[in-house]
Image 1 (tube, rainbow, N blue to C red):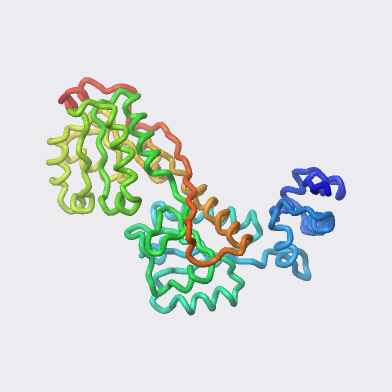
Image 2 (cartoon, rainbow, N blue to C red):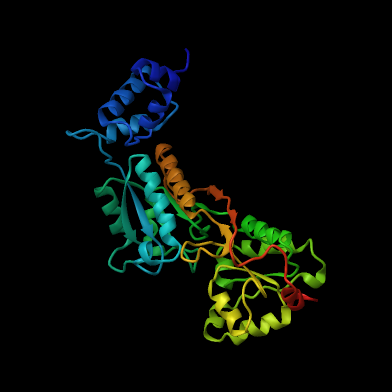
Length: 356
């Protein structure tokens, strides 16, 4: 028997293949009546490539047309209950999650993982009441272990984590490729003419991503003579209280470009009467809109959020639930963005600072 294609559905309805594709993804560009006609035709012809068809037929109807009824939980795993709106990076993940959920016809319900008034069992009951089919956890920053009291959620529903890989439990996750983005950032610094790149990073954050920042930096530094392989600075939180710590490190290591996640590094340089890029280059490993003048790596955290939604929807369609035996990972590549904090080649002043 010939397999029914999307083009066959398009011909039967009298629309383009692209229209069929959009309709089967519940795209609002296609009017509700036309979407239902396409879904019914696809089902009648036996089109099965897109597993969402049957699900949408059962879930996305109301008396007034076709509206999303299935729901996903967007769980704020950050210690700050308002992280979805006021954290410097979490809202970007959230934007991607919301965009992709809407594209697939799902609504999102927001929850806070650390709400003291809600247990895992109670949240599971809420999920069932609201027809929540799966969950995306966003905002883990200090630990890759989830609270045991909430275990009922990942035991009963498909769950995907964004940003980091969790260990207890080990769930499927989507995140930036921290190893590769650090490697590429350092390589870019070397192409710009810098000779002594160094990493400034909170040790807790590096441990959270299983030292992948450090690993990428080490691989990049392997191309350099031993005298130019600088030790990282991990005491970021301590330096926020006592900046002499990083000043001491700087005098000892003599970097000419610093790779970091923190804009406070520029303030520390000013305290040492140094500026960027005249004396020291600065590269942001997670470039943010609130400091657009920085050069660095765009982690595309919104695309990470989109990927997490895709993963959990795939798990729903396959009937997967519980902690996976073999957690899946989706790594999103980062891209370099030019900025005013680096220069094409070291100046004479920078060279003087960076001589071995």
